[in-house]
Amino acid sequence: MLGISPEAAAILCAHHWPGNVRELANAIERAVALGADEWVRPEDLPEEIFQTRTCAVGAAPPYHEAVRDAKREIVRRAYIKANGNYGETALQLGIHVNNLHRLIRELDLKSSLEGSHQKSSVSHRSARQEN
Image 1 (tube, one colour):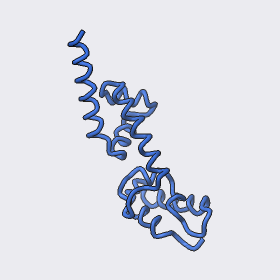
Image 2: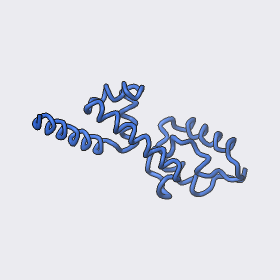
Image 3: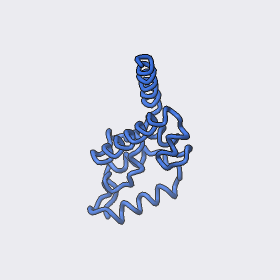
């Protein structure tokens, strides 16, 4: 192993690291163990690192961006189905409500969810008025 590529280093530096040094060390150890190259590349890093969009080198690689988009859509659909109720949304997703709030924050979904719930409420009201 020669080292960490500049792209991977920028991603590591931009990540929040809520688990501090231990989490960083685990991510690097994993990347070294699973990497197929003599350099640690962004694709060798754990997926969790790509959940935040603070990468100094730009957007996440296509796979990680697609996973992030899929997570956003899953949360959005559950939220609409739960009529904007966070507890019910978390229950549908099979996660604790605190994890839901963290996920919404990490995926930058708050304003999107509030907008989708308002649209859903308006369409339900207008459908009731037509009947």
